[in-house]
Length: 504
Ligand code: AHR
Image (cartoon, rainbow, N blue to C red):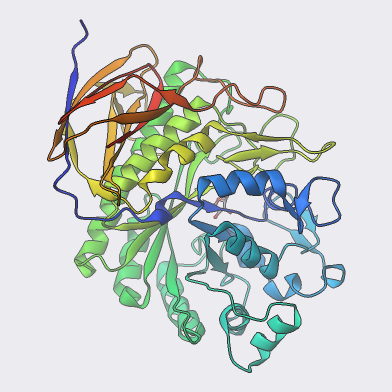
């Protein structure tokens, strides 16, 4: 008989809502994320609705995408929004200097993006150009999107076919301002933020949630300086953390890796928790009431581009390993939902750790990645109340072979639980181990269950992935291995599995 890991879920200790924005997405003008991914244009032979790919749109609708960040990333700080409005045939072209020098025709611009968000029911998150733009340009952009009066920019929007203003909550003031967004020092950026922020006006009933460009992973000085010099002039401060081997051209294959490399990857992804804690501690000093959100607006795995694809387009495959990174990371975000107000995985289609891969050959293929299924399984956590869980389990060690890792550790179980508005529980259980099932016995402290339903994501091999010829190698399935009786919940998690249970 295998020893059971004992877990307690404190069902009567819920305090904090899990923001739906933790399951957010990111779409940059990069590779085929926009063109060929989200958008093919109304004249394409690929099935589309007003230019949006129908297959991709429907798949994203299923995910209940809560927020979509756009137009970058690094692209945002070279993007001039006025080039992307008005009749598409008259829009100027531009060179995408960050991402392979690709020429783009600006056919996907503000109207196309804001309408997409509206159709998806997602909050738009606009990343403004601070690096190469002007205060005037960003302030006019806000007016174009949200102005309701008889003003030049609101009238320009009307002329372009949109009468009512859109609703815009999230505004990012620059991206990676320490790097591709202008190579600034934090002191200088803090002053610039204050200046830009002054002129990005709240229009009528539209209240902006203002997000300052934050640190890359271990740059605690950036966070401290912003907290000291910007403070409550911002509503959120961003953080970027990639699960990456190093920043050279040798990031490792997305699909060919050893078991050791798998565990190293998980240990590196888990170290985001320490990074979050250290940034939060710094924020706590100035903001003990946690009014300023930590916005992890870029995260995920970053591997070598797939052989044969265009350099700089960051097109990568996605295996069961990536799904594990997604589930473990989401469990961490949920645990820190008192400070984390948003997270946006990079990126939604065809770039880095994407939900969806497409091509435009023939009628165009689309596959859902293992990571897509994790986001689908986690939908029920959106807006549920976080419940603490306690347990002890074994810990595996992993070689610290990725970027700035400390000695790597991978606990053999990850648990996250929440109470939904209808009173039922949603519980995620992750067994990262490749060679052993994990039997768990869960005490539901303060909850009596009558029935349990579940979904599982697992694979034959950790290197398994979906491609256009084999789109269903890794996909979620019903999980029947859980039983509940009163306050006792039992399940045996197969090796390498992600299970989400709903207990009523
Ligand atoms: O997501 C890809 C890139 O990673 C983004 O453009 C940039 O912000 C980050 O360096």
